[in-house]
Image (cartoon, rainbow, N blue to C red; front, top):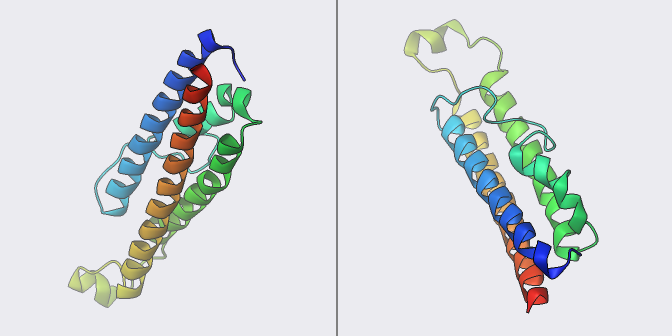
Length: 144
């Protein structure tokens, strides 16, 4: 654990990482809803997003704290779920001619599947944020 002088810096890093995660989630939700998002704003790998860069980089200074350890599993699941959503939306084979003619590019099942996966993604994000808040509280309490 860093000394008291460095804890403020660590808290600031955690808050920046949390903001990066919230931004990533907003982009994921927008893309899943059909809005255009620039390439690179939504890395599929957990080590490539801004949050992951902090978590697997400078954040490793906190790796012995239980709240820090508790963040990894939901973060990994979040990226797996998003990867599944991405594949459902963008790696689909060419739709049948009649669907093109009617202007439909997704089936009801796919739309329902994507919506269910978005709910899972939101739940993982919520779990991550709760663990981040627990981590912040632990570090802040040790400053007193």
